[in-house]
Image 1 (cartoon, rainbow, N blue to C red):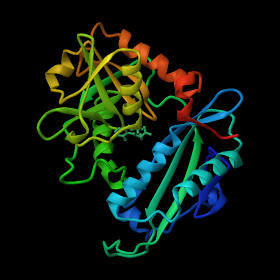
Image 2 (image 1 turned 90 degrees about the horizontal axis):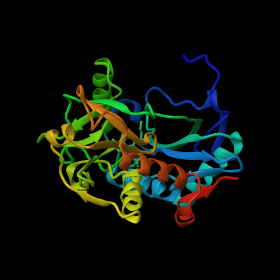
Image 3 (image 1 turned 45 degrees about the horizontal axis):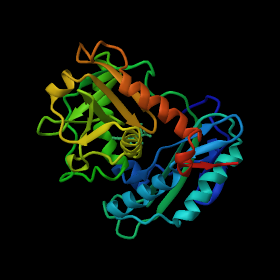
Image 4 (image 1 turned 90 degrees about the vertical axis):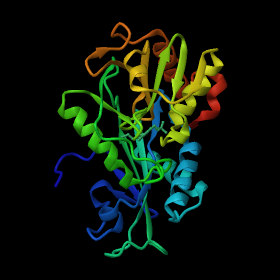
Length: 306
Ligand code: PY5
């Protein structure tokens, strides 16, 4: 058992704000055995005056879509989930950057696989959060585990069980001394990081795999595509080969946790000259401003907590 100081005061569980150490589930919980949960990861940025949640409604929409795909019913309406997230953050009185993790899970205490009319619990956890990947650049490796295909598991949904695929790839990368894994699909196209979408730049064009290549439809991915377009950069969605990765001018990972993080090496080969490139740097700087509500045009994407 963890005996360290809890990272936050309160966790929201099924309508109540509980003390961190009281937010528990039973060991017979269906989701613990079978991975039957849907979750989100949302960042909140502390500006010195307010806590701004980035693209909150898009995350809530994706969580409801994940639940629809899995076939479970989140016991609240969208608006109620939104209010519960804000309530949890206010109760914790955060005055720093945070990561919010809403999770709906099948809480039935049963051995059977059935989730026909399941009990579904909803928890909202929020913790102080800094950088997820080394901000100066990631050393990545192409994992031997392949990304699961959407004919096998619905990877467009953020379902707990699907993350075993990511955990294995990341474990492999870390155990071989790399910071992060890149995953190929069954056909050998590089499709994703373990918890990030992937972008490459070659000859001033930015490429990222299309949604039909069994990727999570990342909200940061969407942000990058829109920001790049708005500042006149060319972005194309197309399958990316391993050779294109090894010879890219720039590579970066995009995700809520990762934000925009440059990849500076893949499998011992430097990306470009081995330093973060100009396209990545420009996008990362713009992204950092946008999420902190410093760009008028994108204020629609931030939701103040206080
Ligand atoms: N692909 C995968 C497999 C992911 O897990 C994530 C997010 C993304 C892409 C990027 O999606 P988005 O931009 O919508 O966040 N990963 C989570 C995150 O919060 C969890 C990481 C441990 O970034």
